[in-house]
Image 1 (tube, one colour):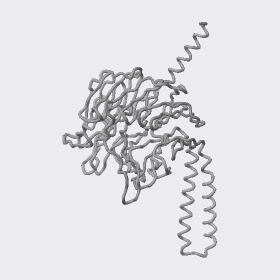
Image 2 (cartoon, rainbow, N blue to C red):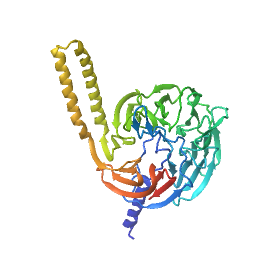
Image 3 (cartoon, rainbow, N blue to C red):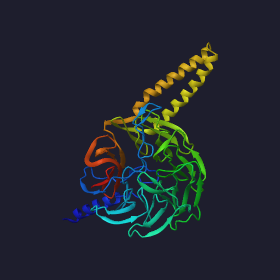
Image 4 (cartoon, rainbow, N blue to C red):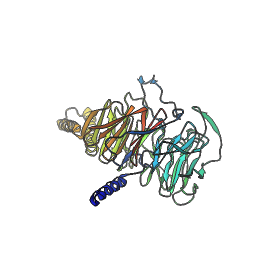
Length: 458
């Protein structure tokens, strides 16, 4: 090979190496975006499959099949945070927590063979967060843990109270204060909560990531009442967002643990926080006939948008990708949200005038203003479809992730890849079960299913 040819090969490998990226925490980052900058090849092939001896044993058995009072069926799940063994991965190591054998597992990313197992005394429902060569995770035994990522040697464990009461729960013996938020690491602190029963006290904790002690700048143990903290924590630069399942997500000051209130009209444990601090979550209850997602301003905590007929979304900068019915859609979300906000203001003004007209029925000026506002609302409504950039058939998406300009969608028995700009299908692969968890890292796509499988494509 010529010198120029060798340089070309070296340049190619250097480019691929620069593009490689770890997936260090649940859904990639502390905003739970599910978005990586790593661009995988268009076509992949299965390298290995990890098979658990049993499917995940979820914390909750799922929503009721129907609501007799509301007359609704097929209710939207609000606490389905552990349907699969979600993974994190750094370099050639893949990690996941197991609700079957109460352990954290490390497997070789190249072969799928197990490297080591670290056992706790109850279920581990979120994958460990990786930081500084350590793994951080919580267990239903009530402890948050830190272990060495290579040797699995325990560094510390911490729980915020000495009460050792346990109870049976969905096939497991658990602490009355399980850690079901995972552990979020940001800066020098590790954040987690110990909570389950709203009539018992709950604890939101920030500990020194090196020692596990709630001592030092930014560390605290904040006692909470009448809450049930569950689902992966999220973080912006100054706030912690804590899902509750069947109650509104809560916002706390990240430096002190002091409450900043709740997010109205929101609920569920499926949450993501955009780069402009918009919180996307489920509905406030299960009484609606259709599945839906709510969008709120996370800083001001006010409701912005509602998307009907969907329960999953992925946001990458200006675009949102969501499914509705059996379609997958790309939405230019910033101008869409702006026009929707303008429409809400116009409707508010129109409603106020309508109230005035009840006592001033012959006021022609008010009638004219009411009619003009109605025309403006109609014009905005007619404009909204143009912000949907593409719409393609896609049956029942379950999990989303994005790597570079490729959108990956987990479904029932299948995983598919789409060009995010055009909506064109690029590739599909078979999986066993429903693909809830997708991770992109170091040349691989990892798909976790409700059958207890982890499929590796590369």
